Structures are given as structure tokens and as C-alpha cells.
Length: 174
Image (cartoon, rainbow, N blue to C red; front, side, top):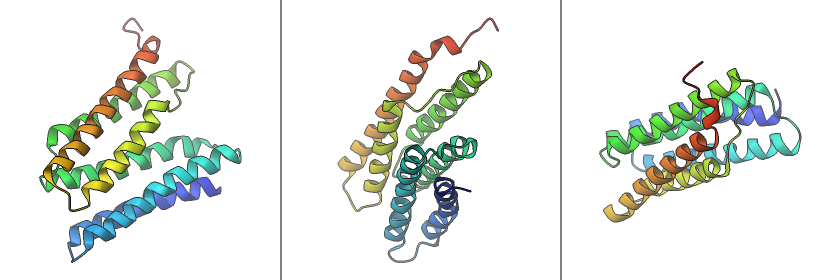
């Protein structure tokens, strides 16, 4: 297993630790969880950089890297939703977008095409991670709502862009 794939596996292993720390709820647990979340997010950027720069792009990485990203983000958003910090509709929008883009990619593969992450998808990932990180801090309701709306709007925009740019993949006559 190459270095990039090892970082992806590390990120996957960090997710249950992240959740356990959150649910233990000891004093300072949200800050420890924030640290784990940031470290896991750094492995996302590091494994992508390493894989591209060293030519280590593998089928495992193509599948597991985005899956690890989605699980990490959804774990945090669901925890915030459970705590009443993020409305369920906002978390649902993120979840639906992720399933829809994944379905689009699967349709594309069926047509012999690969849909790589676009710029808006990469921006969505960065802004979502930043927004989630801020939500771990003791910020006011206005900052929370700015983060929630930032996450929702970039999620919707990037999802729509994937479908507009790849509308030829979807055929109702197949």
C-alpha cells in the first residue's frame, strides 16, 4: 500500500476515534475532536498531493479517498445536527448532494468516462471543512448560521455544476 493510500486509511481510522471523543463528552472533548478533525482533514490534502505528485493514483485511492472525505464530513454534520447546532435540512442537502454526485459518477463509469473532482468540488471541500472547524468553537449564533449557509450554498452550487457539466451522462432513453 503506497503512502497516499496509507493516509486515506489513517483518515478512515480517525473517524471512529473522532466520534468516540465527541460522544464521551469529557471536559475539552470538542477541542480534542476538533484536533482530530483537522488532522484527518490534513491527511485528505496530503494524500491527494502525494498521489498526484508521485504518480501514486490507484483504484483504491480513487474509491476510498472520496468515501473517507464524505464519511468524515457527514459524521461531523450529523453530530452537530443531533446537538441542534445545524438544522437537519442543511445536513440533508449535503447528504443528498453527495449521493447524487456519486450516482452521476457511477453512471459516467458505466459510459466509460471518469468524472474527476472539479474546482467547485474542491472549493466545497475546503469551505465545508473550514465551516465545520469553526462550528467546534464557541461562536455566536450569527457565525453558526453563516457557516451553515456557506456549507449549504457551496454544496448546492458545486452539485449543480457537476450535473450541468456532465448532463450528457444522464440519458433517460438508455
